[in-house]
Length: 192
Figure 1: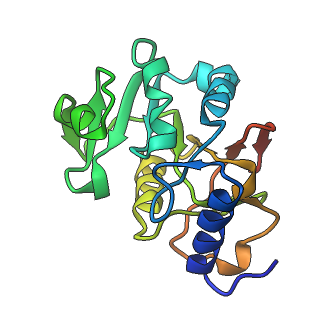
Figure 2: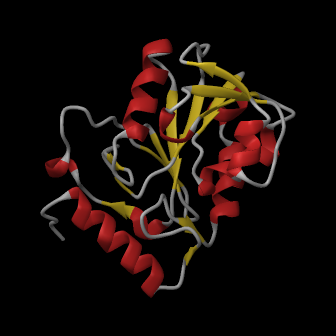
Figure 3: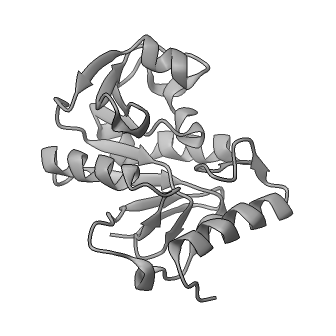
């Protein structure tokens, strides 16, 4: 299937997840939360790349925040503030809502340390490491900032299998950032 734009890919993913009844709130207009997200988090916890990491980054999107409650006592955790308005924060406790997480975290602005592993939200990814977010470019900015601090950081995303495509490279632009790993309920795909 060929798409004419990233927005067309987003609409397709949001619709197919709803149609197949595998999307839970939030979905459309967001990084989609999906049935099976807990299974993908278990796979993240088993990754050697994750186990070796001292500091990790978790994007503030719902499907990635599931990781936070499992790691808060084991790793030094950083998260972007919504839309990077206040840069980044160091998360020291798990709370059920993003607002409470941010409110009770230490804002560090853009003065983040070297991060070893990141779990980023995606609307769609391909098997070549290309990623499409919800629009706005914030995920790409987060990845770029993290890579400036540590060029060898592992960037992973956890998605439903319906969010994975063979090739979306024809839609990518210069500012788009690639990922290294895709985690789905079916498995782990190392792409770079």
